Length: 109
Length: 118
Image 1: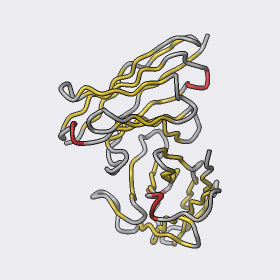
Image 2: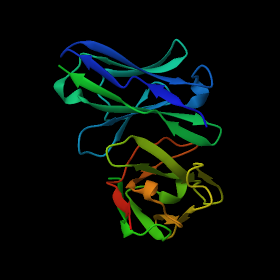
Image 3: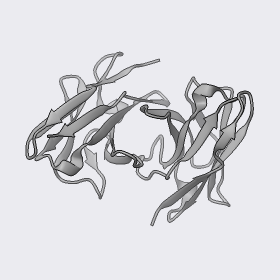
Image 4: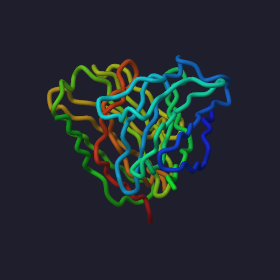
């Protein structure tokens, strides 16, 4: 069973930039893993913010961007806002099964 | 407007069964794969499994394989999760998602809570 790793927690200052990463114990994350990023605010349903590495959905704020960086999937938040404080989960595809990372709690402080 | 509405959650004893439903609207249900994801209280997200748009292919996490079955009724625009031989560790909020292999995960339902306890 593959293991997907994320930073447990990160802090960013308002207006600052932060990068969350998503790694795999099977090797480098590639486009073939179709990386996703989901945002979940306290008490709310998760929502999809990035799919297929860097593709945004219609509701994804422009300050979020996805990429592949150093063998990992990455979510970069440029110009953090207080409302971006949330848990962020990545998701990778392995064959015909999906595996979530453990999540990163992002604090905007 | 896409809507996904889960139902069927509740309290069940270990070893029992439950069937969750997800009523879909606002899109052509039969064109999209669908997926179930769960979240145990205070924990992260776990992919449970998915089904192709036609229902001819199903995929499951190892943790539920052989106990859970995903199905769909494209005439009723409804996705199902049959949960058999439930365990305490199946306690979670279960979400249905539009999408899966070959189509993006975009919309989430509100979730339904399943509690397995004696």
